[in-house]
Image 1 (cartoon, rainbow, N blue to C red):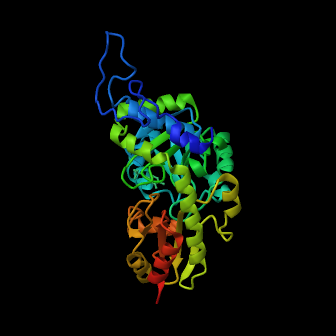
Image 2: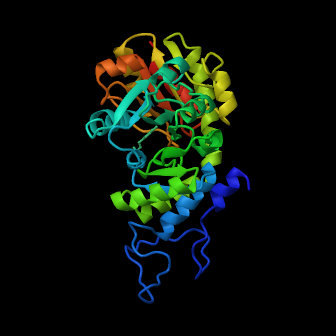
Length: 379
Ligand SMILES: *Cc1c(COP(=O)(O)O)cnc(C)c1O
C-alpha cells in the first residue's frame, strides 16, 4: 500500500458490530471480563484502548515500525524514551534541540544522574569526539528547530552503532510523509503529534515508534507504568487529522518554498534558513534523505529585535503563536517564545539571535501569505 492509502486505512476498522467507516471513540475507562481469565484484549484504558490502538497501528504503519505507543504529548513521548536509560548513562543531543527537550534533558534528567553532551551534529568530527564509554544514546532532530540544520541520518546511525548506542530521531518537523528515519537504521522515532500528524492545532499529543518489537514492548510497558498514554478522544482526533497528512504536507511545503524564495530576495531579510533553497548548506543531503523540504522556515531580518518584532506583530494572516505544523500559518520569535527556557549563552551557542523569526507555513494561498509578509516588512 502507498503512504496516502495507509493514512486513510491503517488501523481504523475497529467496529465489528456496526461496521462504522470511522473508528468509534471508546471512552470507557474499563472493560469487563467474561470469566476469571478472559477479557476482550482490553482491561483498563491506561494500559490499552481500542481507539488509541487504532491510532497506534496507523502511526506504526506510516513510520514502518514494529510498534507504536501514543502518548499525551510530545514531551511525554520523549520522557518515555529517556526512561529507557539509567543514572550514569551518557546521551548526545544536538545544540539546537527543541527547547522543551533541552529543558527536560538539561534541567531535569541531568539532576537524576543522566549525563548529556550537546553538539552540533552537522560537524561529524565534533560528534565523534563526544562519544564516551558510557554513551548509550544519540538523540537526533532533523531538520533542527529553529535553524533547520539537516543531520545526516545514515552517518550518525553508523557512528552510534559502532559505539553500541541507540539512536532516536524526533521526526516532528517532517512527519513520516517526508522522512522515515527507521529506514536509515534509527531505533526509535518520536513525534509531537500536536504538529503535522494531527495538523489542526486542536490536540496536544505524541507517539513513540520502535523499529524492533523488543523496543516496542519496553516502550508500551513504560507508557503503562508511568501513565503516559493519550486519551481516547485525543487519539480519535489525531486519527482524524492524520488521514490528510500527505496532501497537507504537499500543499504546505509548496507554499513554504514560495515564501522562502520571496524572503530570500527581500532587501530587509539578511538570511533565510530553509533546506529547499540551493543556498542551504545541507540542501543536497535534504534532497537525499527527505521526500520534500517541509513547511518550516526561519529567517534573520536585516536589523535587530525591533524589526523582528515589527514583522511578528505586523502580519495579519500569520498568528503570533508557539507551535508548528497546523493548517494555519504561525509566526514566532524563538528567543522569547519557543526557546525562552534556554539560557542566553546556550541560545547564542545555538545561533538563535534576536534577529531570528520562525515561520510555520500553513494551507492558505501562497500569494496571500507573501502579500502579508511584504506589508509587515514595508519601511
Ligand atoms: C512541539 C515539539 C515537541 C514537544 O511536543 P508537545 O506535544 O508540545 O509536548 C518536541 N519536539 C519538537 C520538534 C516539537 O516541535
